[in-house]
Length: 315
Length: 151
Image (cartoon, rainbow over all chains, first blue to last red; front, side, top):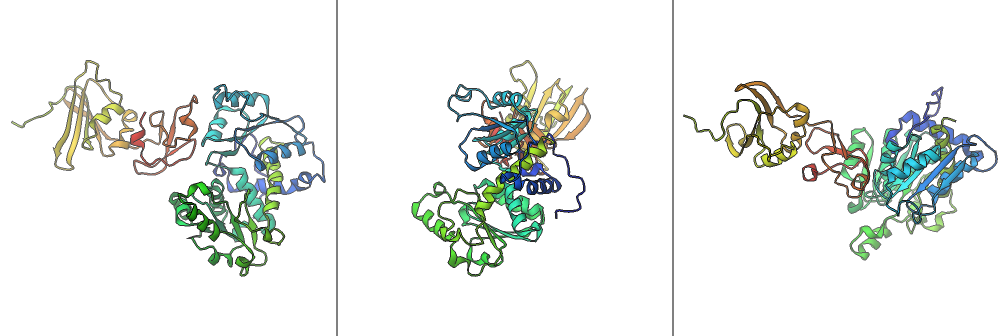
């Protein structure tokens, strides 16, 4: 699905708030560009493509991978980063509105990467900033760059996304990555199994949206039964605080744990992904198997965010 | 002679076929100032051949436009509006769900940025044909009960 696009579509000046803001063509443009960024992301090749450009990295919530990979992406392309040291000492604690903080950061920089604890914060910011705003996760809402790096990982490892069967496992109710990933996979033609216990299964309106898109979706609570047909098993963390009883949590967490014995029927090329951080859902014994791609996936955050930064700045 | 609980009006607007029990909410939604010296008649739980029961509102000397009344579709989807001049109906229309509701209904997601001290009005977009099918433009939350979140 990567050729025959001729000229790349332009994303110059575009805000990326949800994965829905991008057309299929734009998604594939990001993935194509990301591939060319890999040697630069690894430090094997140098680039000054974003020299003189400034990224405002506004993280109002702790983040490791997203923040570091955005900032690394900017540095690898020769650009600079301005940032805040936590929320202490910043205008937020003095009662400044997000919209004022954004207006200020906007005139100091060329692009804004934002993470915020409130849902809708990125859409609001996009309305106030002249320059592009990239959502690095807002509350339980959207996290489009995670989805793009997930799609990138699948395509780099396995090829054509539309031919894959992706099994998404864990907290499908509250996990923001799983909602936008399942929608993007459906748009790109992949089939999906949604595996979770009933109480944290995918919200009905999302399943309805997926079905209305004509997606091949299988909703189940049985992980073992899905292993054999999966090309990708996408694990997510099940959060303890979603359960009223500790015992119930342990039971569920135990039933959704990948280990060697569970993978007996797996395809040879099947890959395991995880947005990280993981707790117990993937046994460390799998880390050195060819299936384990979660650290590659974490690395892919850099080339994908490099591609996004370049594209929205039109460089 | 037919017993009229509310008299016909000379000039103004009649809102008929209102879902029974919601007339006061309708007045509230239309932001009609009841402290003003204006003749307003309200009938609640009136018998209706078609609906069983209905509410009716008549406002003298005030002509409502479709845009103003469309929000009513959210609380009473079947309401009809008649504009009266000199005792005659000169225009009649039904309320239609607006494609967008701005600044009138707050997003029910308490963690939505619009429920913070930000200088933007709430903005809900219509995503289906049922009165409740609205989604927050900012946080994307599908609203479950927008009638209870009217500002």
